[in-house]
Image (cartoon, rainbow, N blue to C red; front, side, top):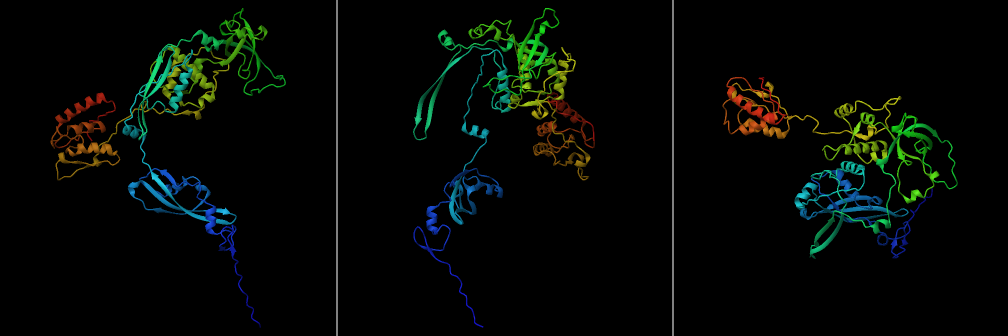
Amino acid sequence: MEELILEAPTQGIIACCECGAPILPNPANMCVGCLRSKVDITDGIQNKVSCIPVEIVSATSSRQTPGRMQMMTKVRLVDGVFIWTEPHSKRVKVKLTVQQEVFVGAILQQSFVVEFTLYNQMCDDCRRAEAKDYWRACVQIRQKCDFKKTLFYMEQLMLKHNAHEKTTNIKPGPTVLPTKHQYSQQLITHDTKSQIYDYKHTFCVDLLCEVTATAYWKDAFEIMCQPKQLVEFYVLEVDELRENKMQPGHGYISNRHRLADVWVVRGNQVGQSDAQTFCCRTHLGHLLNPGDTVLGYDVVNTNINNTSFDAVKAESVPDVVLVRKSYDRAQRIRHRQWKLKRLYHQEDTSSVQNEFIGFMEDIEEDPLMRDKINIYRKNDKDRSRARNAHSVSTITSEAGDQVPDGPSLAEMLDDLDLNDVEMKEVVEHLTPDRLVYDPSVGRSKSTFKPDTSIHTFFQSQNSDYLRSGYDRGHLAAAGNHRKSRNSIDQTFFLTNMSPQVGRGFNRDKWNDVEIHVRRLAKKNRNVYICTGPL
């Protein structure tokens, strides 16, 4: 049989398309040197990164550190090694090796060095203490209007974002005059090396702003009615408009409201034979029913001095403009399960209290406003106080208490106030199994077995008392009584005292200390004394 010899196929050699060097065939048809000169896969990756030093090094934080670098998600990290640097240089150098597909089937691998700079950081309190940047500022917020709901809303925003934590005092001010202020800045010194500028700031405030007639009448601002002019009306009949004819080019129609023709009468004229009945068209058709009360403006009986209003035809002016549905305030307060926090806890006048209650009613009806503030759930004490204050309702409907839907339980927060909870001091009870009694020594030299469940701070306070040679409440002659008196006084604040009635017990000295502790108990209500034996 003839032997068949097959030769292995040889791989061809091609020339690089850039430099002409012989290379093996690849998808780019370029040598490695030309490929690296044309494509840089590390372009865009940060080579200098700042980080915070950590006391405990973990594998999780080490893996996350390269991930903080930009453009690292577009390459594949293959290897990374640390390069030695001086510890005091606050520099950490890492050599990273990455891969990326540059052409179809061509993967390029490249190494580069990243330098991490360590920056020490301090908390806000330490930063203020080290910088010695103490300053005092007094901020006044003024509003020119007839109501304070805007200030109440701003108060709730401050509570939500904890803007009042760094303040020393917040209090409301009386009604003041409008002001006009000017600000000027003057350069005092300038350091060209450190780029430090010293300026002199000057504020000039005029307490009374005089608006000239020329400036006012150039762009006069007028209002026809104010919220204090709202009148309560009683709804007699509601006729909802089912078909609304729209002309071509009509704008957007709200789906939250419904048009209806409503017949109303003033609330103070209900039941009178000569009561005047008004018919108006309102957008509150989905809320009003016969027998409800609604707030609106009595345009017929209101004196409006406005040239634009006088130009409107009489048949186009409505008799009544209904604004919002009205509910019984006593019922709303009694059924309200939530409350708001206040920045100051001083008693307000009756007018301010009424305005704040009106502000809470606006929050109850506006869910968008509730999303921007914190609402807290009432506790049992607040519910009973509100129930007793409004135990008698003025008006009750036949269908029962009708109040608007307020905030849900999901919107309320639990009000945790440490001052409302009766806080007790750490109490350490003395039991026979905690005492280690040695028959070879006297009762006055018995030792106390420490309790490891007590906080270390209180253990250190108790250890001072234990070194004096006294048992807990056992005042036999063992050591200097005056020297250990301070440690005894501190211990009485932290523990219940039980005298050990036994051999060597001195009743007179125990009575002396007991009187002293009872004096302390009058000053601090959280101190409890137990004088019974074990």
